Amino acid sequence: MGALEGKVGIIFGVANHRSIAWSIAQAADAEGAQLVLAYVERMERFVRDLATQLSRPPLLIQCDVQDDAQIEQVYTQIREQHPRLDFLVHAVAFANREDLDGRFIDTSRAGFLTALDVSAYSLTAVTRGALPLMTDGGSVVTLTYLGSVRAMPHYNVMGVAKAALEASVRYLAADLGPQRVRVNAVSAGPIQTLSARGIAGFSEFLSSMSDRSALKRNVEVSEVAQASLFLLGPGASGITGQVLYVDGGFSMMGG
Ligand SMILES: NC(=O)c1ccc[n+]([C@@H]2O[C@H](COP(=O)([O-])OP(=O)(O)OC[C@H]3O[C@@H](n4cnc5c(N)ncnc54)[C@H](O)[C@@H]3O)[C@@H](O)[C@H]2O)c1
Image (tube, protein in one colour):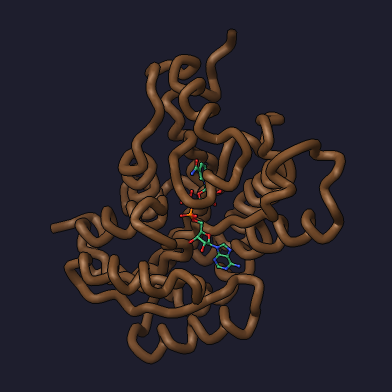
């Protein structure tokens, strides 16, 4: 029996086959979970294609996390098919391309607010929507990056958003603990995805990272998915409010 057998989970952030969210969806499907995939309109074609690969047909729902009405609609639709929700994966981030290049000091007010809204506030918004359905406790996992605690090249405003996201993880964990809802983050090492390609110099950065990590390699997306699955599942029942680094040991290295 799979670790998520009989569990129902929603995953925000599948864009294409490279998405970390897609790897988590495949891993959760393999462990027996029934999934709901929430995606943005422009990715619909890719998500519908991918969905056919899952062993249980997922419920597919469009959702722009900047729109409260769309978030509400997601949970209305889930309620029609599922009486309960057991887990939520938030793998959503966005910043304007011009804010992921050049100097941080040039970040516009609008660019700052967009990055923080999509990449940080949305965790609270989608978790609040899910809460009434998490009647038997639940687990929420989001994806973050080391740029939250270190000034990484070109990460700029996204680093500020990830810092807010990680603080949100702690406040949500404290808030929702009494309802037996756990909230954690996985801090992934760099992986070639659509979003990552928006960061200036990402490919060069990726190749220079592996040498400086303890494992002397970059992490695989499947490794990030397995760690996320652990946090979602019963093995992590005593863990909440934490950031788990899945980065080949890059973050703890000294020189
Ligand atoms: N790829 C990496 O190197 C890396 C490393 C650490 C953390 N992460 C984080 O992992 C998460 C997933 O990113 P990814 O690398 O898989 O890239 P991705 O591009 O596949 O996923 C990002 C997702 O965010 C969605 N999104 C953007 N704006 C949205 C909006 N307004 N409403 C709803 N969804 C929206 C996109 O449609 C996409 O599905 C992000 O939070 C990212 O910051 C990525």
